[in-house]
Length: 211
Image (cartoon, rainbow, N blue to C red):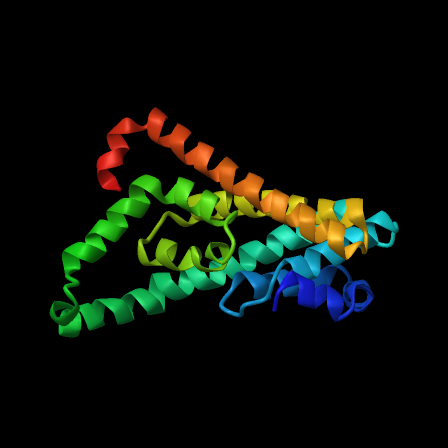
């Protein structure tokens, strides 16, 4: 469902849902959004931003609940891939890997990649549409250090949460303005990610061979 369809379904309905569910609702919905279930964060955070504008919710508490929810969902995916997912993949590679040109070395390369680039990959991934829901899985498969994973997940999620809350706060229920500025914000975020990656590679030239 696109953002446009969500607004046509009734922005006030979403606002009422967030208002009734409160801070715990924001946490649960963002946990769902950050895990396997495809649920747009725009449908949670933009209405929450409107409620902040109306002084019916507190910005700080909404921000904390949203970021913690994003982290909880990301950790669910991470641990699934780290434990159950990795075991399944290891067994599948042992049995069928040769038919798909996948070997144990391929898995080791994934581990090496996240050992060397896990931080930047997780941070940037949390800012990219679609990717932000999935980036936790390869981080888990690659056995990225969990505390580093948590830190960069929170950092990336926090920026995205701020952007969406700001859109709701600044433009209220004006569908056209939100859609226009969401597109601009997404483009700016993509540009920001590209710049961050280029700076990272410039500062760490020795790590390029791990790409």
